[in-house]
Length: 65
Image (cartoon, rainbow, N blue to C red):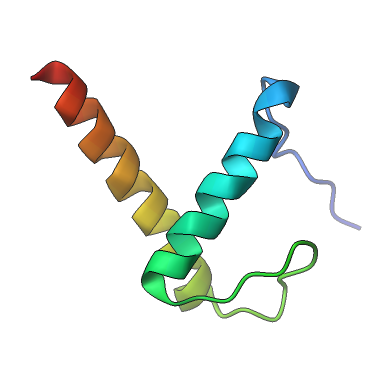
């Protein structure tokens, strides 16, 4: 039995994080569901996460300018 430890530190941010994840998935061509996405490959999941990190880094770099 696995326990999920990926809780959001600021619960009010959950909706924004979900929108951000869906936007990143659309940009890389991955179709996410609102609920269960266990049928996705590691590559698909990784591409969504990678896109999210890329956008966060770009946003941070813009803030430095």
